[in-house]
Amino acid sequence: TAVLHRLRAFLRDTLGSTDPSVTGALLMVARRHLERTNATALPTAGTLFVQSADGGGWEATGELSATLARSRTFYGAGMGLAALAVLTEVVKSAVGLRWEEDSRMEAVLAEVDEDLTQAIQSAKEEIDGGRVPEAVQARMVHDALRQALLEDKKDVESWGGDFPFGRALPSVELW
Image 1 (cartoon, one colour):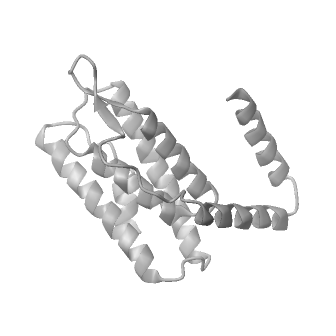
Image 2 (image 1 turned 90 degrees about the vertical axis):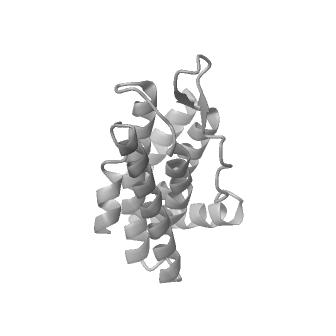
């Protein structure tokens, strides 16, 4: 993974210091590749979180890590709506979970909240850039995410927890 991190840093530095048309061309190729592959497949329900071995709470699985990495690839390539479709499934999977304050689970969900806000910004740029052929698609993604966030908020309030998506919900509401 260290090599991968160095490669990413090199690519970011290179793209940041070259002609903007090179960056645009690379993003276009990346988007086409992601659209051709089955990268937009949604995660399978029940695979993102498991009950901890001691039965005292919930923890993230490796599938969640892979799902978050995939969503970051999407919004990094300017495919915010695809990222939001994937992240909506993560939010739905969090409904019914319980966690303690300052726990690893709370930290994981805070990370998801950050990804949601990044993906929302990317989706706005995707729409503003005219890369969404149908406004209905954007509305459907928005509405599904909003509904999932509201359902999760209601669930967390029912057991007195701290709502983990406190930045994403207002971003969706203002979108």
